[in-house]
Image 1: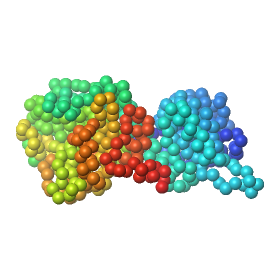
Image 2: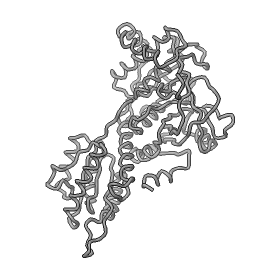
Image 3: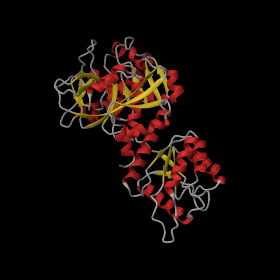
Image 4: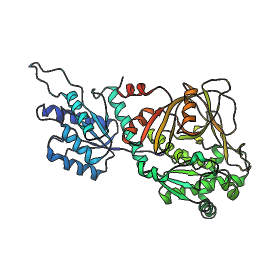
Amino acid sequence: MKKYNIKIGVAGTRRSIFSKNDAIKYKDLICEKLKSLNIEFINIDDINEEGLLFSEEHVDKVVEKFKKEKVDALFFPHCNFGSEDLVAKVAKKMQLPVLLWGPRDDAPLEDGTRLRDTQCGLFATGKILRRFNIPFTYIPNSSLEDEAFERGLKNFIAATNVVRELGSLRILQISTRPSSFWTMMCSEGELLEKFGVQIYPISMTELVAKVKKVKLENKNEVEETIKYMKRVLEIKVSQEVVEGVAALKVAYNQLIKEYGCSAVAIQCWNALQDELKIMPCMANAMLTDEGIPVVCETDIHGAITSVIAQAATMGETPTFFADWTVAHPTNKNGELLQHCGCFPISLTKKGQKAQLEVPFALESGCGGASFAEIKGGDVSLLRFDGDNGEYSMLLGHAKGIEGPYIQGAYLWVEVENLSRLEDKLVTGPYVHHCTGVHKDVLPVIYEACKYIPSLKPDFYDDVENDIKSWLRGE
């Protein structure tokens, strides 16, 4: 799986009317805590003798340093009251995700004085960031050892990762959408203008030529892929099909590297079968397992969804791309997630072995699909979509349940209220595709949407207040 690394610029701040020594003490304690959590960060210890932001002369120096270090996000610990104007000026110049937090204030001293008034400083900074139209995240006023601090910090880092990955996303589009799949229409211009997403289109002819070239010039890589497939799969197709799927997977890798892409959307039928006599599903599955999501039917919005979901996990688990298909025969809130086989092999249900097979629903009769039930448990289901110039992210929870055997790769899931979900899918702007991931990423994506102005979270469960409560550490 792809691993991610986020670098945070840490600029502790103080105000002169409160204790300088206490502010320095907490700045150092915060840095030690970040080190203990293996968070990569850059502080401002070299900007002045205190390593804190408290004067106008520090603003440009802090900005210059953070830009030079290419930080991905900003953290402004309020080590005493803090300087809200300076925080806002740095944040405005950097235009990165912003995290606010300050240590919970101690009891007043015996003489009635106070060292920090950190909570009051956070109130002030939040207001001024709003004046500057700067979105921000805050961790509730708490101690460094409170669960709320670590939870909030890690959620913010994952949200930053989503923002970064979306803003730098380049999708390899292989051929056009299937002609009858009007649901797969998208606006390439809008995706670039609103989200910074780039589409790199190539023809099916170029892909076919690359696969044929790989078979001739990259025999060792193809053979290694075949060995892997035979080790982890139950093969129920010809050796010729196995070789074709392996060559396609190697070709994908080369094209992704050549064109600087981090996801693929392919017209998986019917032209590919006419040319290569295989289904691409298992090659898609293997690449997705490696952290490069591949989606079917040239679903550009589906590729975006998968990249967002994977980034939200920080690479801890692969995504799977599925159709919402049919309701469960006996569970009123059960639904089948199924596709021809692009689900990662590593997600196969324990005790089973994925089969390399021929899909039942297509007329070509070509092999290369996967038959496998994947593991259940708790999953998050997502869908980035939009029309008429507006975009949203459908979000919700589900859990794996038992259900009838189905050909293809599949998972039966139960949601809280299938009727409510169905209403969302029919009335839009969503389609029949979604991305699943075995982790609760709803708080991450909810927070990330603060920094993506054109994207609104849309829950099919009634969970928004629960997520807000979780983020507050309640």
